[in-house]
Image (cartoon, rainbow, N blue to C red):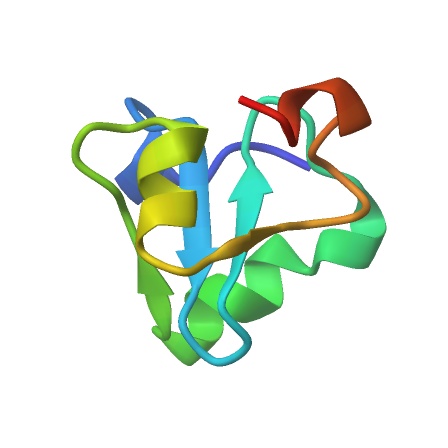
Length: 72
């Protein structure tokens, strides 16, 4: 799975439909990033960090966010 072109300079991608944040450096098939991009219900974060995504009430994806990163 390749990084979406629109997000080539971002690491964290939020799914607005379910308030989940994905790590674009570590995606797997279960993340369905291609389907998320087609839905156009995604968000980028500024700054592009996991703590910022969590600050906006997004929870880490259980598939692509390493468990050690959850505490960040």
